[in-house]
Image 1 (cartoon, helix red, strand yellow):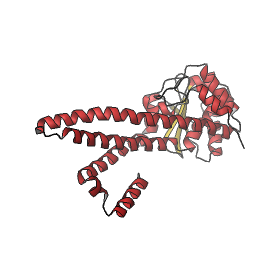
Image 2 (cartoon, one colour):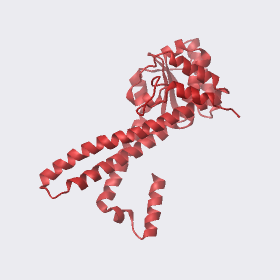
Image 3 (cartoon, one colour):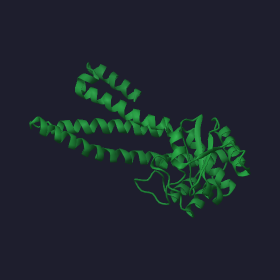
Image 4 (cartoon, one colour):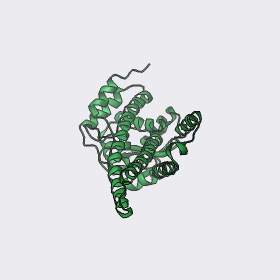
Length: 278
C-alpha cells in the first residue's frame, strides 16, 4: 500500500495535480478511512491470532516434559525451525480430529499446533512432514502476507461499495429517501464485493499450500514424506477448524472449489510428484 501511494503521488506529480484533486476531497477522505479501517481490523486479528487460536481449539502449549510423544514433537519442531532459520515456535496439542495449523503475527514468535488424532493416526515421518509444512508457513511469513491481502481487499471493498452507493443514490430524490437508498446499496455492494474479494483470498491461500508442501519437502530433503502424509489424510476425515483458522490448517477437505482455502489432496500430491530437489 505504501508503494501504491508513492506511485500514485508520482503519477499525479507528472500530471500536475494531487490525489485529492484527482478523485476529489470527499473520495480522498473515504479512501483514507477505508484503508485505515480495512487494514486495522486485519492486523488486530493477526496480533491476537495466537491467544485466539489457543482459546478456539483449547490448545495446550507443551514443553516436552509431559511424555515421550510430546518430547519428540517439541524436538522435531525445534529441528525444523533451525533448518528454516527461524526461532522455535510454541508447540501445542489440542483434542480433535486429524489436523494441524500454524499462526502468529511474527515468524520468530509463532505457534504450531497439532491435534491428538493426527498424532495417533500418522507415522513419525508423516507427522514430521506435516510439521515441516507448518514451519514453512511460518518461515514464508504466510500469516502476515495473507493478512496484508485481506486488509487491502477489505479497504477496496469499503471504498468502492460506498463510492458506488453514493453515486447511484444521488439522483435528486429527497434527502431521507436518498439516505435510505445509500445505506441499502452499501449493504448490497459490501456483500457482492466482499464475495469477490473472498475469491481472491481463497485463490491466494491455495497457492500458499503448494509452497508450504514444497517447503516441507526441502526441509526433509525429499517430497516422499509429505506425499505419504497427504495420502494418509486422504484416508481420514480432516478435522474442522474454526473459520479464523481454516486457511492455516494442513487440510480443509479431500476436494477443492473456488471457495476452498486448500487445493485438493490429489492436486497437492501431483504437484509434489513433480518436485525436484536440486
